[in-house]
Image 1: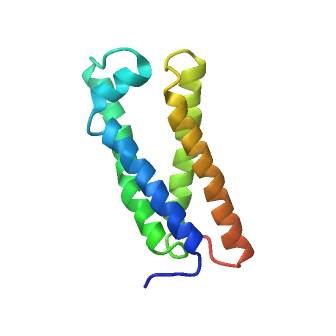
Image 2: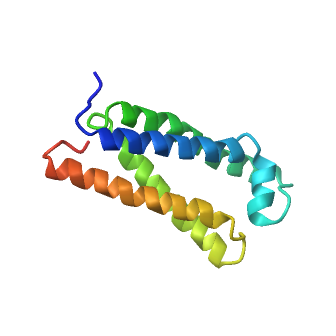
Length: 136
């Protein structure tokens, strides 16, 4: 049954799902183009190709996960927690790629977006905690 107690978070996770779908649209469905655009070099290595595409495949899966959370933000806190940890880890790793000179400034779009979602996810868990809702 759908929980309508936190409508802001329903909207937040719909936007998070859309963000992931847009990212996966580039990274998973147009892997070589996305890699070239971010790293300024072609994606020639088949192992790199599969690993890079797989990372974007995880992004695509969380599109569905965030839709579940949007449907019932109280019930699917585990998906939100794993997704938030993933967003934070991914943003940090991509920021390291940028600072090491391996990625160009386009990667900052992903980094900044994911950090913004991390902040909203932290607020989501704070609100659940202060409302005495079970987190997981």
